[in-house]
Image (tube, rainbow, N blue to C red; front, side):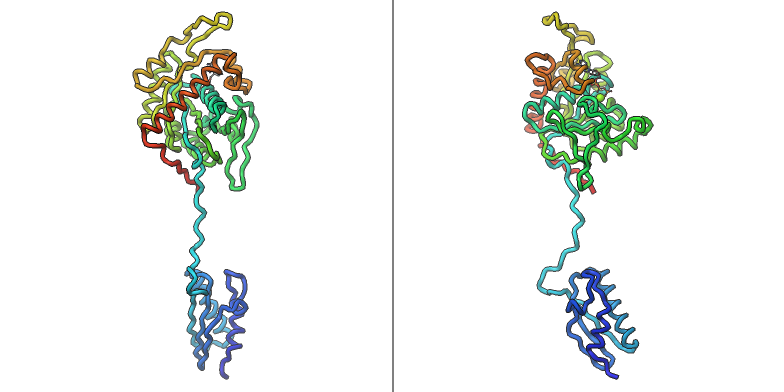
Amino acid sequence: MAITKPQVLDALRKVIDPYAGIDIVTQNLVDDLVIQDKFISFTVNIPISDKEYTDALKKRCEQVVQDTLSGDVVLDIHLQLKDKNAPEPKPQPKAEPEDLLAGVKNIIAVASGKGGVGKSTIAANLAVSLANAGYQVGLVDTDIYGPSIPTMFQLRGERPNINTKRKLVPLEKYGVKLLSMGFLVDQDDAVVWRGPMVSSAVKQFLTEVVWGDLDYLIMDLPPGTGDIQLTIVQTVPLTGAVIVSTPQDVALDDARKGVTMFRKVNVPVLGIVENMAYFTPPELPEKKYHIFGKDGARNLAAKLEVPFLGEVPIEQVVREGGDSGVPVATLDPASTPSALVFQHIAARVAAETDNRNESKKATEPIKIKIR
Ligand SMILES: Nc1ncnc2c1ncn2[C@@H]1O[C@H](COP(=O)(O)OP(=O)(O)OP(=O)(O)O)[C@@H](O)[C@H]1O
Ligand SMILES: [Mg+2]
């Protein structure tokens, strides 16, 4: 018995186009059906030319026609794109990795060789002072073992939000966007982490944050000049580094190591801040007691030919501000000497950043790709 077109079309109704979820006949995809004895030829107009898709569709057509018409047929199936003139749909591009630091103009690391010299204090107050000056500022605390931001900004126990793209949204206080390892990692868990674990956690942490537009992203580094610090400074393209030191020799030796580390990885040192430079008793405002030595960091800056950014006195209100979560830079500079000092340091850092960006190649467009 001669094979008829309706028979072939009926068979082809069993071929469901996986692209549309509807059979190819209902979709009017079958064309040019010609039958001569046992020779059957037709065209299927396909929506895409993906090989896996076309191979599967062709095989399915062969199968249903063979099965329905008892196998004794010879098939010639053409697959062609639906609209020959239409541009072939491009394979779906993989989602473009997001450039999460694209809006960040300058990233500045605050570092020291030695622990406890006041990095976090300087980083926090520098961030607040820059924000007070009208800049858009973020502050990130990368110290997994001893994060300071939660306490210094009265945000202990807070958690950053996660947006719909599963990226972290920084918290915000005193006009500064804030993120700390302390918001994410339980301190009791962190103490047993080894170096590589810390490095990869910090890396992920630094690059999975929606910072938005920022003039300055200040990074508070953990103390030291080891692997963790090196990983961190190489994870993001730093505009520059601010080194913090007290005036005493042990701190200065470590500050020198800090400068060397940044120079090795080609990160310009924007300058050195001398912290705990002197003490002025409130009742003797004209006196300066140089408890840890005099001008040590200033002299080191001169020796290493890096800018000296200023000296921060030892003030009770600085320590109290750190502990109570109200950085001294939020206070009135007219009545709080160290608030005024931080205002000046922020201005110097901004000026040195401008200098650096004018004299050296502009900070490379920051491209941290997240896949
Ligand atoms: N200028 C200052 N006057 C008074 N107290 C200060 C001053 N600078 C820092 N401190 C206090 O000294 C302590 C150590 O400071 P901070 O935590 O900023 O140091 P750090 O270098 O970040 O320490 P770590 O190396 O542990 O990260 C804090 O209690 C802080 O409040
Ligand atoms: Mg610290």
